[in-house]
Length: 454
Length: 94
Picture 1 (spheres, chains in turn red, green):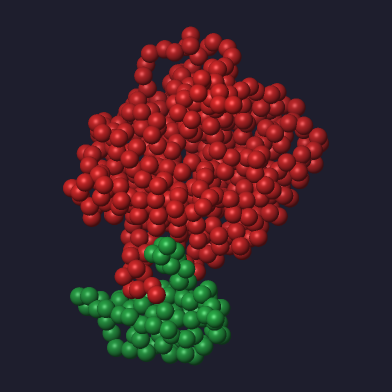
Picture 2 (cartoon, helix red, strand yellow):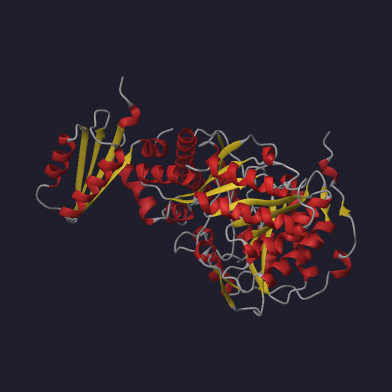
């Protein structure tokens, strides 16, 4: 039987160490909404989302109350819209109408983000892929909760450099056109290599074409719990450190598994995966950087950071996989700058640079995330940073992503506020040397030699 | 056979005062909720109690019970929390 100390430990994690379930994300296939008439397509999409997700928020809140565990976000991911809209959309403005429909549907069911305004172009772009990509600046400016992602490379296909170059331009453009809005559109836009089909986390969530009609994916969190557990083993050996991380990751993930199963049962929608990521928030103590500091670094970014992060990421997975039979999504440690107070502090102290963050992305679950850069950064330079990040993913057979936020009128050291879970960030310095001639070559980077496994 | 899903953990945390257990137990008895186990500690004046109860025969739904206990807690100045047992089982048992 459960004893008082175990109850106290769990409740302390929830009340004092920010343990929560970060998101229940309902993946919805929109393939059966496809129609060559744009009006009909929009109608089908609205009806499919609002009927499939009508109980999502209520069920999430019910589970929160019964277990006293916060479920911070209830979200939706949909089939990549470039595929859904291909038959009906003849221009970028047509795609924007779909973005607005998604926004309306998401608000109607009460979710705080909807992902899937997406194109998968890892080898090349179709006409509709390109139209969607070109519509992103307008779509993200004229909607509030729609998130967009573009997969521009994979280990199997190489990197579509035409898409990378185009994304450099679109990110730059999105920052400009959304300048008057309260939120910079680039905070809702991710570029991926090896994007997973079942990622529950925003802004990169979409419902892959390999998935069934609807599915529940759950993302856990818990950097605060991890840090607290590690304070108890200060000065101990790596063996003890790793054991503690694994045990803690197991406990965190088990809660996510329980919530996922309950949500699946109550909504009558199959359970997909648990994403066992350590996902930080700007709340004090809910920071992955703090975990790295607890492992023994003065600041995230100090020498040893990549090794510490590699260890952390690996042990989180080892502990987490035993807690759930279906693990997927991004699974690892997130290192966004603006969403993590410890990372913000490190960037302000000068301990953390984009180059060090890039090295860290070789060993953690995602990539260059929520990084504010000067507003006058050239599109070609943004494309160069993206290409570097994509190459890391392609060669290492892992997911990498770039969510770069050019901030118009801001220069290095200025603070930029994104609000809520997105936090705030100091504008970081970008290497000033040109990569224009490299980026302006046309075509794609071929798949690496180790992708030929057949 | 015991119904695993009906087990609920009630925790009470706050300054020690006369009649905390009595008030909680009266509510539970009135509503057909069976107490299976009680443990408590007092650490530097703070009262920390945990009850394992069976809600299989409860006359009220879970949400109503949780809200009522929360209200009773507010009246006597302690925090009363009502959680389904599975969250603890999952976290602490393999």
